[in-house]
Length: 540
Image (tube, rainbow, N blue to C red):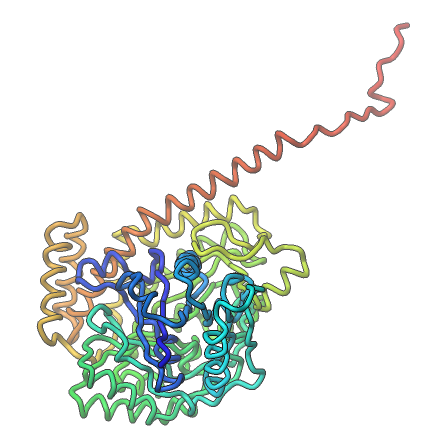
């Protein structure tokens, strides 16, 4: 029997990690490592698996000693933790296999791995298993010569080949949400997005029965919480989604509507009332939308033509009225952006019910069309770092100091307590009926009591908290539960902005100013050149 240790690296504190909120409700992570439990379901049943998610537990020496091989997977933001795991694996004398999104787009980050697996596992599991067994059999006999790379197939697998993930490997009680995946790929051509490079532009979907089987598996394991459909664009294949949603609704009804669902979708969702209604009926309450920018010029230059077809503020309002909370993604630093972009973004976001607005600097990810264009133009400054709140790897057209200062001030304004709670109140005023579960079980009551204690009594934001709860009490069914969750999330967003984001950006600005001062100090002055008129004339 082969003992396989699956290790998921630690995330740094981020906006979407909700670490401050997790502490208040005694959870350790928002989401599980879906890729690793999907991988485990594809590999030989005769192998024995142990999963260590460093976001919920520690990697012990006992785990490393137990293993015959270590599998490691993660995203670019987790790179520091991945490097630490690689060092410990090497010190323990165990072979290391690395896969996942970073290994697929940037394999150069893993020179100490023994095997780098790029792309998707489905249809290729026998190749990986054979390579791993050969690696273990020859371990200690080969001189290290860099990792062997198994490159991704040009033909992407059919999603009907995806097995039910090994959810049983997870410590379910430590997560606020579970994750399942309905589709891979997106039909659009956004220049800055690496999804279409990893998964392609054809939206491949699972059969409805597969999704139902995954929900059944979670329910049988006793999981209680929300479920994130981690699709890059849930509505990328509308024809198939329309078939899935009624089956999801029937399953929810048959089991007492146990799960609140959320996902990611493109903004054209707002133009399809029937689809939004079907999503809400199936239990979807929230959708992340890449709104990016109110600038039509920036949208056109970045290849995001789907966002040009409707006004972003009206699209947000339409989805909200349909019963879907919009979490928004926004970007500043496009080539066409000038200093006025910050006021435009501020007006769009502050005038909307987008409580959770993620604004980022434009970053070039490896392998994207943006990366390739900027490489040709000589405007790349290395690989992107793991911290979003530092100088981008893109040499911007806008003056960089103006860009950083405008970005800093925008985030300061968006996540002031008053601004955050104002957007939450706007959502309560505008949202349609929310047909999701209300309070259920001891855990929900625990959340409520924690919020009352830590925010309603102890927090300096307690007056804003009570005002939101009073508004929610007079609104639609289940809005009170939503308000409590948003207040808990807000504690993280507000604290993280003030305690980490703004100081990080201040430091980046100081470093840029010092860099420019040093450049001026070390640049020799231009020689003085006199015209004939400048020369002194002889005295008469």
